Image (tube, rainbow, N blue to C red):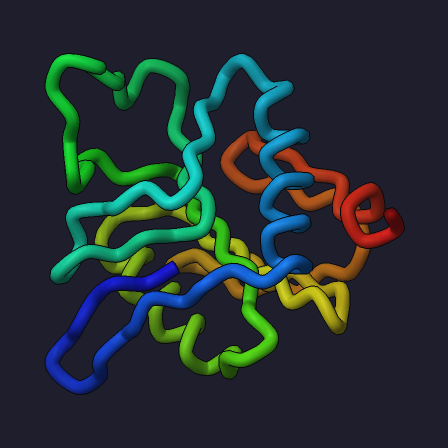
Length: 150
């Protein structure tokens, strides 16, 4: 999801579809099995006016909630941001968002394209493409064959 504005383009809020919501839920199911990380959905990051990845993944203990005092924009950057490309948006739009996320200090961004069952893995150094397989970045592993073959 995106709620930001840079100097050249307005990024709008993107609502979730059934497939997008399903993929995020299946990703969270796998991510929550790893005690070394914390995964959050729809977390506003203090980048530009506010960027909101579908899923933000942090090392355990890097961010802490406080039910008495909420944080509207998290300053700590996750090690991994995950975006599921919605059916009504171009991939170009999310590549621009990925660049903003990486330039802000996020080590890796995964862009998941459901129709092609593809995972773009982006970092400052590399750009890789995977299909329905196990993807590992920053010690975080997800088996996409379990997500796409259900």
